[in-house]
Image (tube, rainbow, N blue to C red; front, side, top):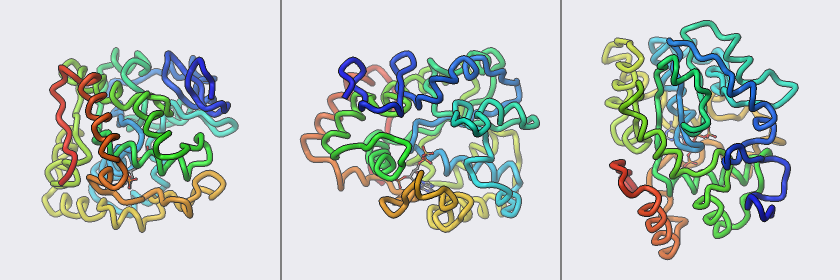
Length: 296
Ligand code: PPS
């Protein structure tokens, strides 16, 4: 453990303004900060494990007017450039975005304070998906176990400490959701919740469609609901990460499409951890009107 940052003594992550990021992203920071957004960009924004892949598939299905074959053109990770992605010699997320014709749909896990300034200046559209922090933590724990590019999460008890202190890739969940929640009235932000998509997918998909300026028939919306269900996406090689080598994502440890439920935290949190999480939540999120659904 590095005593100055509290991060694992590994070269995988490095802090940028106090937020742990992949070291290669930190190395590429000036290119990322100078990214040139365009006024018609739509940026999908999430804290990790909050339903990024799910909303990407929903957005792409809307963009392709419900044409499943068009959504099979590439794996989901490649359809929407990930702006802070850097893993040389692969082209960076910035380069991939620059190569994409407009109107572009891009994605990020960055908190508001680290977002390239041109996104604000160009008044782009932001689609933010938030997931309750307890389920997010459980999902991230299993992801760090199976993702060989991330530090080992340690025991569940150790991971609880790291997550609540924000010592995980992309930093504090609390700061992330709070930051995006607080700017939502000043910019073009559609802020939606993982739990609401789970509860009433058609309603949330319709909101996303309207935000994207599209108008699709009810039958197309029904098709999108069906195609983006957990069961369908778990079987779909273009969304389930089965094409990623085992040396990077070892799905024998935990599948990428793991459970896809609301409330799995109850199978992991002790009573004491639940109380501690709620106490930290009150401290960090006090004064915020945001309201999370913890079970369905
Ligand atoms: S990542 O690595 O940050 O891009 O991960 P992300 O895609 O944000 O989150 C992965 C979790 O989302 C669940 N997921 C879904 N849930 C419900 N329905 C659908 N269609 C769906 N697709 C992905 C996925 O299973 C991960 O959650 P957990 O709780 O681990 O199952």
